[in-house]
Structures are given as C-alpha cells and as structure tokens.
Image (cartoon, rainbow, N blue to C red; front, side, top):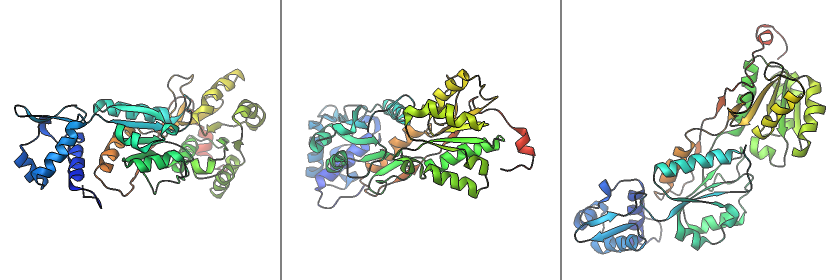
Length: 360
C-alpha cells in the first residue's frame, strides 16, 4: 500500500491498519505494543495514536491498559459491504446466483453486508460513512448513470460484476466476469460435438444484445456461414419481444424441425421444456434443449446449459476486493471460467452426423 497524493500520513496509517484487520493480519486480534507497531509501520507515536483513535471512535478496536489494543469485531470493521444491483431480476437471472455466492463469502469471512438497488445510491457521504466497499451488478451501463458518480465520489473500492461482453466501464472500474461471446460459442460447439446440425439458436434480440454477447443475431449467423454451418446459420431466430416467445416457438421454430434448440437465456429454455412437452415432443429424444445461464436440476428433464457463473465467483470477488483495498487504483479485470452443465435436456447423440460426411 502506498501513500496517496495529498493524503495525510495519519489517514494512510488508518487505511493500512484497516487493511491488516480485514486481511486477518493481526494475530489473535491483538496489536503489538505501540513502540513495536510504530517500528513496524515506520511512523511516529503521534501518527499511530491518531489512526488508532479514529479506529476506536468507529468501534473497530478497543484500547485499555490491561488488555491492550484489540480488534472488537471478527469481521474487522463495523462498516458493511454494500451489494448493489441494477434493475429487477427474475428467477433465471445470473445476478441471483452471483449475489448468493457473494453473500456466502461474506458469511464465511464474518463480514456484514447490505443489499440495495443501485438507484438508492444518491449521497456519497452517507455511502462512505456506512460501507467500506461496493460490489455492484448492472448490464448496459454506459458510465453516465447518476449512481456511478456517487460511487466515484464515495472514494470506496468498487467492483463491477460484468454482465456484458462489450462492457463500457471496464477501463474505469475493477471488474469480474466471464467472456460472454466465448461462452455462447462454447454452447454451440457442445451441440455440434453431440452430432447436432439442425440447431435453432434462439437469441433475445434486445437493444443490448450486441453489448451482452458481442454480436447481433445477424452477425452470429454470418459467423456460422464462415465456418460452413450453413443449416444452423439459417436457423438463427431473433426474439424481439418476450411476450412473443410461445408464438415464435410454434410458428417459427417447430416448423424448422430442429434437432436442438439453443436459448440465449434459461428464462426461455425452462418454459420451452413445457411447450415441447405440450406439443408431444420428448426432450432430448426428439429435440435437445440447451440453456444459457445456470441450468437446473429440478426441471423435467434437468436443463442442460452453459453455466456463466463460476463456482468460485464469491471467493474471487472477495480476493479482488482485498486487492482494491490496498490502494491500487489501476482497474483490474478478472476473467472467470464458464462451463457446461450437462443435464439431461441435451443428452442425446446423433451418431449419423458424427460419422457421415454430411454438410456441417
């Protein structure tokens, strides 16, 4: 940790000690003697006492002649970690899974936290007085949102949990997430590896589609043609309105007689299982289904999907937060792995396409 420009030494020492507490670097929660601690930190007693007094007033430490200086709370601070999300989310939204993982990491580390909507962040001074860091979620953030100014003005370390391939604020904030475009293509490659060729790619073509995936439906179709997956390229279906989903399935998708349907969200893949069952289609015997999100073990059959939330997400977020609290102001971009949840909805293998020299 380095002294910031124009930062008072007592404030620097305060930050340094707070970091040591959060990183659990105070053995048994008991501080060394003042002379020893001064030597360790390379500061005078006056500077050290000023920092310790501030920590005492904030309820982080206690000081007495008999017990010495000790950490009060196991979490190392009374301030909490702010977990903030943007907009509403539903049961298939990855924010829920990621949020739960961060909550678990906080509980494991005995760190207090609060969950708020990003739009509630309106006063930087209040934010900085109540919290020691911010983890926030949000798609299609362009950098001009009012809550970003509040986050900046608070001076707190902040981490953005990326939801877009083309994230517009990566250069300004430390961030963590997956490479969405590669994750999407891995799902298509997975279906190809099972021998599927007549693959419908159902892509929710919202305004932020190119931001989220790094391509439009048309661009994805063209990329398939470049790889000679011409049949699949002609079966890319853009969904422009969520309310039209069931109509699109009946009128556009089923007439194509697909071997597999690849949905750009579990939000569509889960009800698709129901619709196919109502139409007398067996999954995956008649049609394979692959989601994009997390998958599910409780659907019938269990939904296979590209999992875009790593099991290590919570731990990785906390490690990145520790790094940001060292005073390093250079934004860090952490890329996490994605995986295929091999449920049963995409479990069939088309051997004919695997062994015959047919068109890709």
